[in-house]
Image 1 (cartoon, rainbow, N blue to C red):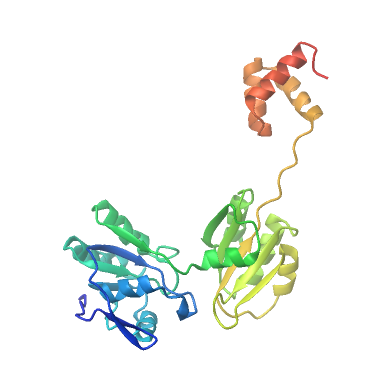
Image 2: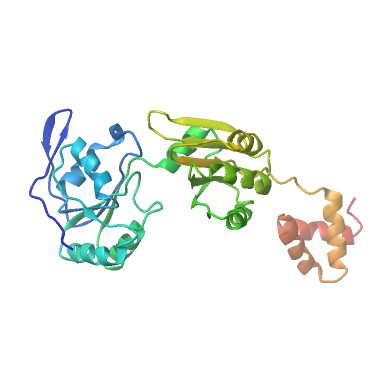
Length: 301
């Protein structure tokens, strides 16, 4: 296994040839387009052209990107099947002071690819790691879905088998954030059905397909509506599934809180009863303790 170091540091934009400066030593994590090659940033092009070594998941995919911008680097394969051996070669180059650029097939490296292993080894060796931001399928889906985005949880791919898929959805059911998943077009119908049954048919969601590409599509609705729409459907293209957060829990009624406090204080000291009630209701322990004292003094309504 050898690593090619090209002497050419040039790239082209709209027919104009530009020379990139050599990279300073370090590992550069370069985001690439998720579909539309026009989303490639100038900084990313400068980084790829200026790198001593360019590592990627699939050399054939990356070659298309490089040809588009006339970058003459020979990409070096680094993927989940050769990560251990290829990672050793790249780490040796980094230790030798080389500038190494890492790209995934599409989007941002380290998001559902083995790049995190190399980044972790570089960080452990005190080697500079530089993110070169750009396209990201989870973020593109989130902003296009029209669902709450003040908090979101990216969960990657769900398990392939139905039980594992449902178990994972159960784990995520109460996460107070919008959920984002990658999904296969062959499994999206089954996933929507499982999500509908586990998370509830009324929960809002969006199926985001072929993002940034010619046939980009957003289908929005409840999980129940989307599960029905995709049941038995033949679907093509890459998919990101976005599911809105769970509905806010209804605040417990004062009468129910008082009944719980009375039940607990019958078997434990007031402070402990208030702490246990706080665990069960999510209300502040201090407020519950004061309420319990008022009840014991006969001042609670």
